[in-house]
Length: 221
Image (cartoon, rainbow, N blue to C red; front, top):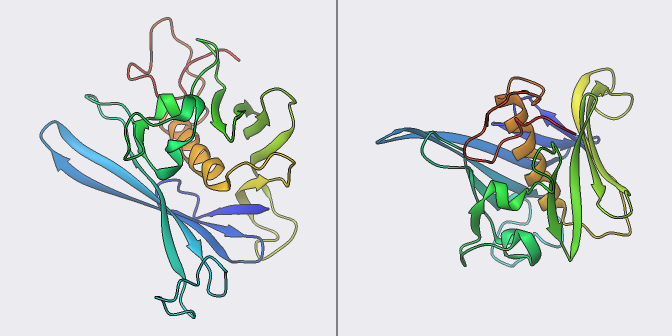
């Protein structure tokens, strides 16, 4: 499955399939508070009319529906990035600290080594790790190294965006039943942090460039 980010703005965009169907939407808002602005992003899954998940007997079957997957309060000088989502209630290291499904992004996407640039999450008892690669990210199963997903920016050769250069998130069919919402959410957090870090997320410094511990600014492999 290919998802294209339209427009190329990880804060406000729609993930669109190669056939032109909207699949996810990310909406970001800002509000003022005492110590500065708080920026919050909401990730919604778009459920098409006719999808079995759409039919609950209460909505117009001809209308799309939107299901909130997660909300992300982005890091400020006084607080770390916080993720709120029902999918945070999974076991292992992605378990939420409270019943609302709220936890620090650094706990959802954890590092296995202090200076590693990879970020990992757990789903269904398995561990998956996002790695930085040329021109994007690669998601692998930690033990088998099976490729689960890949993000690239390249010229599209098929579908409604053929001939255009787009950011594409490719999610592969796999024996590992990874929650697609989890893949999209984790990718958004990493890509936002990468862009905030200056484009490639590879700041090298002797001190901590990310004192709240939830960015992608550290060096190493």
